[in-house]
Length: 307
Image (tube, rainbow, N blue to C red):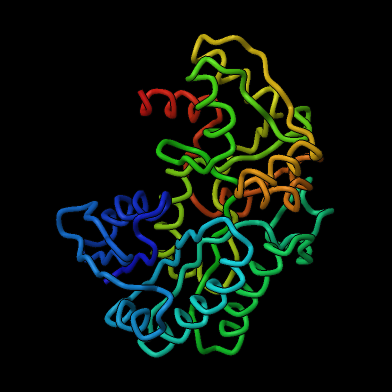
């Protein structure tokens, strides 16, 4: 049995499809799980309750933790440490391997222009501090020999049915409405994005590769990072739209945060947009025979599948 904790999310739903290449025994865990494959086992659980996490893990060979909580600092500080602790304890109790789908918020600010699995861990944000806490929690148990686990890290991701992506929200949706797209802070800086289908497929591959465990992996991402300006131009070309855009400066984000709750969460993360943000997945590329989606292909697929 391979179990997806947080199965209804952007990554979880695609991951369920990709795991069919390895097993017919897939358990989908969430408050209201929905089948992706005909043979999926649905497991309703409130993942904020440790006893329910334990029951969800019972009988699993591999557990994929791909939960996506609301993008609010207080929610992360409250829920993430408790969920990670409960998941680790359950995996140890039931001898299950753990695959944690992570982001890059724990890397120090000077690592952002070229992030690798060996980048210095020193988060410059409060959300990053939460990510460091839960990653450290997992790695500590791996180092103790009690837990077999891996961390699969993604850059900001983009793809179909991913409304939380900056590319989808600020670029694609605006252009689809005939509005001018937006970018954050500086459109002349390069910014890596991981295609969601690649992320899910690679996560399934890692989870089913024995020697991939007990280490950190960057998920496959097009190495030819584009600037915000270049990414917007790709969308404009494919949508036959006018190639013009607006840049949202920090002061405007802070003002918007007074009226729009989600925008209040953004300023502390803007260090990722005022410099190049390059996500290096060469470790994965060298280990696996994997065809990574290019940005040109990814943009075309987003537009095609959203029509």
